Image: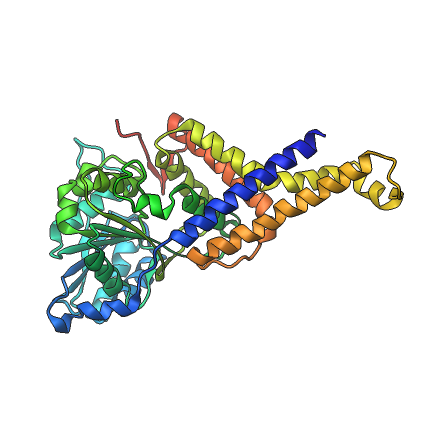
Length: 412
């Protein structure tokens, strides 16, 4: 009976979670690529944009990222500059970027060699590289993207046109999600779905709801005037999750934040292995929730009831021989009360497991990530729950809390 009660609760959770994800997906605004024609350079209306790519040990990404930016647009150097800010990488990031610059001979591409970080102030993550690049940037708009992002054709024009038309000061989006290794397939679609549930597009885009703010670091387009108003990356120098903090500052300053579905603008492959995935999400997740331990425990519980529990229920029935007993001893009229309980447990488990597919299918409308391995949601949910708890532990204790070898610390 205890197992059946837990499954009933699991069904309630899965139905509510599915409803919330469906609402968020339906409310997600999309950009119209055709509208970008309104602000073509030939009209004399198109503003100059500086695309800034902070790069630390991105040897496997930086070349493809830069090429994708340059090939995504026909904007000339009058309207576009691409600044790759090497953050004193210890791999070949800088040399690869410089070689590409020589090969391409494209005047729009510039490579910046990062300076040592100030000793009198703590600068976390990519904030120092971004701040240095902004000093060199000359654009009216500043587009920050990560090295693991690949812009799609017309992305820059479409994003700026949307920002201009909708009077948006910070335009950000959830790009298409690329998964290749097994760990990515297990965790990333679930994480993206959870972000869409927690940061409902309607609430984030509502200027009156200053407590609901979110920005995706892989793609953030600022009006330079708005960026300078909130103090830019210098104001969030010590923030690990600087993208969310910048979004909060935009809304607090009564500036307009726009969160869009951006699968037509860019794609991102955030992590290429389980170790990178674990390090990356445990770095960001707890801080993204404002160091709310209750929120992490709640997230872990939701993941458990939503994903592993129905599979565990079936496993328990199988190990205890109750499924075999149901098959061999089933009779009408039913005189053994255990038989209908077993049957109901199986049915409830199947319904919740089917919700796993529904959730993946709904999330794909934003992420364009297929439903591959959806039936391994039980394992994926367990990993996400572990990441949530691990993120809180690592952040509060500092034990193993790093990013690519750099030790992290709380900004006090």
